[in-house]
Image (tube, rainbow, N blue to C red; front, side):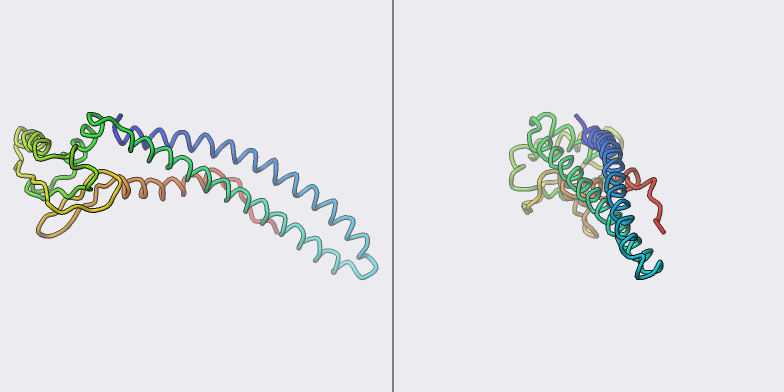
Length: 204
């Protein structure tokens, strides 16, 4: 399964779960508001002797607290949803077969290479999968596409979950699974927030 397919599945699952959470949270928020409205009415009656203004102020305070509590609950569930989705993605990537892993990395390399003469930095855990002979295959495909095929394996090793870093004389391009998942996670957090709070309106 390609990395794009994995991220797509995460996104689809997260969207479905976010919509479910959104509906449940709406029901929960309505229940909280109903309870606090009843409490506000009771307090209002008790405070009538002290004046209408004081009663209204207390009612607004209680409703504001209720809104904040329901929003906090939704945000907590959103964070749990996203963490769960990306933990599953990380586990999936860590348990790819060598053939699946190499197919993903090869596709990423072919798409990320600029000069075709970069150094490829890998993690110490990938020494048996991203080998000089593997890079020869990638270089061969680059050459078949009319591009320089002179990628070489760097002796340097860094700590990351998978993928690689392309280093040229001018810059480094991060194509590690860690960085790709983080980018997708940041994007997905925004999307899920829009789903959960699409109907949000300020309560005056």
